[in-house]
Amino acid sequence: MKNLIGSYPRVRIEGGGRAVVSQAGGVLLVETVRKAGLDTAISAALSPWRKARAVHDPGKILMDVALAVALGGDCLADVGTLRAEPAVFGPVASDPTVSRLIDTLAAAGPKALAAIRSARAEVRKRVWKLAGASSPDSTGQVTVDLDGVLVLAHSDKQDATATWKKTFGHHPLMGFVDHGCGGTGEPVAALLRPGNAGSNTAADHITATQLALAQLPKQYRRGCRTLIRTDSAGGTHEFTAWLAQRGRWLSYPVGMTITDTIHQAVGRVPATAWTPAVEPDGEIRHGAWVAELDGGTLKGWPTGMRLIVRKERPHPGAQLRFTDADGLRLTAFATNTTEIPVAALELRHRQRARAEDRIRAARATGLRNLPLHKTAQNRIWLEIVQIALELLAWMPMLALTGETRRWEPRRLRLRLFSAAAQIITTGRRRHLRFARHWPWTDVITNAIARLEVLPNPG
Image 1 (tube, rainbow, N blue to C red):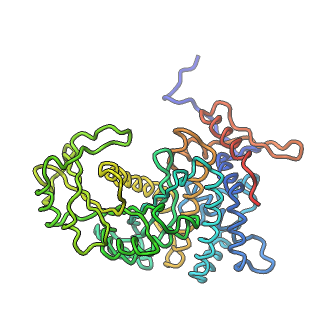
Image 2 (cartoon, one colour):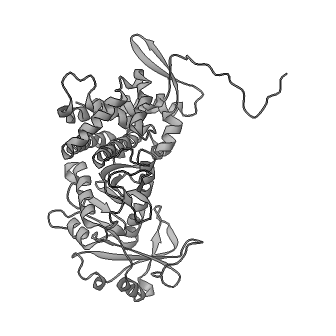
Image 3 (tube, rainbow, N blue to C red):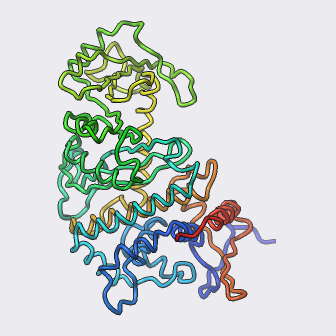
């Protein structure tokens, strides 16, 4: 009997394997594209940029890059992972062809961006309808979170500048539709900005909100059923006035900076006016209280605005700030929502922290860096990243249930997309046979079954 050397069995390596598909779990994304009709919508939108007698369709090329990014790629050349598996992903264009298309779309500028965004909005409406009770508008309200992202640059790219964190790169402003505690979220806006762009620039927040509203179904593009949430970067006179403008009437909670006026007003709030903060399950949040300040602190702000302050014991190890009072951390936000208790409003605004999860997912899905040199090219890249993130949100929304629907991109790749399978052709049809011993084979097959029963587009 031979003794094992080391902790793992020794496996001899040979090349030349056949009938095996790597990244076979990516078929979940392919089926999502098919059922959503995203491939045909993008293809139709980009038809003006298809050259006569071209072998590869521009829409298919763009979708292939988005699929590669969703599977973990971070540059155009990573589309080669799909090219290696034509049985699952079909014919894939060469790297030079992909680069030429990006250059062509970048040269078209706003026209190409508008075409891609229009196709995404059209497909989003269909996906939400297919999702039914799992869609983000199932409660009759849509929540959009705006937040900035710092994207570092390690080379001299166009518009890469020093950032407010003393790094170097870009400062895009992103918008995400929140899927609630039972899901993740999907991108609806990405505004590429130089690294030195201000965090609280009202014009940029207005532009990002306009992009986000254009992505929503028509009934959510105005009115109080659409909620716009931001941190203190959105707490400006211009932005809040724009949100509440007559004819727009959007709901909002925006973070507010603790000024001397607010700090003094907090000191005048009687002890009986403070209400315990609550958790999502309805339990009291110990060590945290909320109160609404009087209207005198909002002089000069839009009519109907409410200012709510929370005081909370800092977490162990957290340092107090000058704006804190009596050893309690102070935060504030403003909203135009009425007839809801202040504790519920504070909980709703605190749940904006889920936007940080969406940003973490975006960094893991092509936004760790901007791989191209020119700003126009990187704007196209941002659209590709958004399509990839939408697929990673729509697939769980349509095909997964329970805890699996909340899996973030890294976990989806590790457990589902990375699964290999044997490809078999029988009866003129191709079948993928996943390994029986893989722990998440049942999740994959059940998800495929749910996608297959959905109606085809058109």
